[in-house]
Length: 490
Image (cartoon, rainbow, N blue to C red; front, side, top):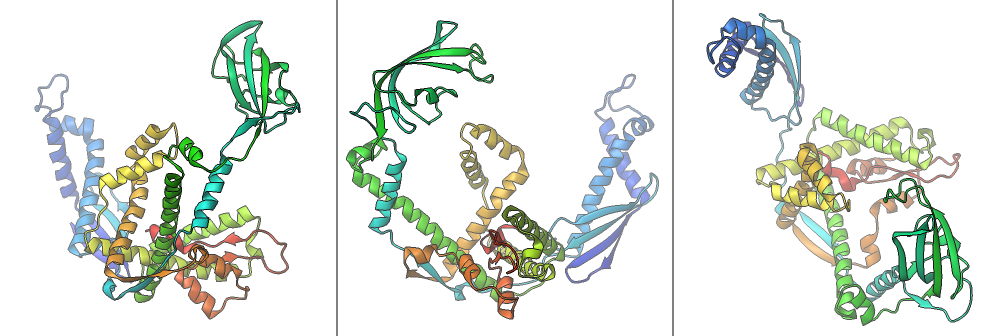
């Protein structure tokens, strides 16, 4: 076996590897002998099949298995012998192989840069926090109440309109015969809710209390009950009351309907939810400041392939934003060359931060347990009511999907670890200041041609919106990639 290093430029390492034909043949023979110990062929006792027959019957499949195993083992040996830590999966290409001849292949690998994380105990960060004010709780309660429906009977004889509710009895018939599930008494139906089959509610608009209405409908072809699908039906409807929506009074009764003991308990629950939102905003703000400080404190080369891949992701996102906003690349106040240069800086920053966080996690044995991944899978599955089991099983069967869940969990654990080492001081601010988006502030500034200051901002990965030139028609701006996700893509 010959391992020859052919390139050591920067973070790139290339190797050419030759494995002698005799070594390959020995491995194939050993594997065939192993297979022959258990194989059953007509006319031969187990373990007594001649090697020539085994080679004829299984030689190709065994050769493929041996080649794959050999390439993997020798590639790992080349990395281990040179004490290399790959930054991503090495690129391996077989350049020469014929049965009976030497195996020759190449390895192209980008290695982890050599750097030492900063002393995080010297890191000083400011965490913005805001108190939950009573008026915010009241606003939230009013919003919740507005989402509730409270209908009261009207005393006038006016006709019903969409948005009203009717208290009705009804009997449904197909070919004059009532069908199962087609009758009810004292049912409240909100007109415009589309809770009944198409055409039903529309025919009750204009009805008054005491009216008898004959509603004629046709069940959809894909209706759940096969005996009714596509059938014409007639519903005899008795209207008892016309009810109109009334404001919901926020009191103990309202809280009880929502499953809480009283109004105070509801207020406490709402306050807790708002506190969680504020805490998340505080964490995001702190994380951003931490990443900015880390980016400024570390300057090391990043693997070119990783940077190029991240740039392609950013550029693709930018093009999608342009398309969604109806803009074109030439509408922007920067040339394509300037934009590509700016986004290359953002890509490099993201990769550097990702490598830095990964190294901090490695050095300090920070790991994500399978239990944490399972909890994330359950949380994802809950986003699909009625399909929870299917979604959970899909995650279980696809390791790459679990890896996508594992990455942000790992990042959050590393961020928490750094936060514990750093000196973090809290600063009380207003809710508006806490919720202020620094990206929006940047976007609101007057646009000029790129300057040194703007370039520095781009290198930090700050988000700015791409805006049309003055001569272009006004359209919604396409957003540039946000730094908030900087280290999630590693």
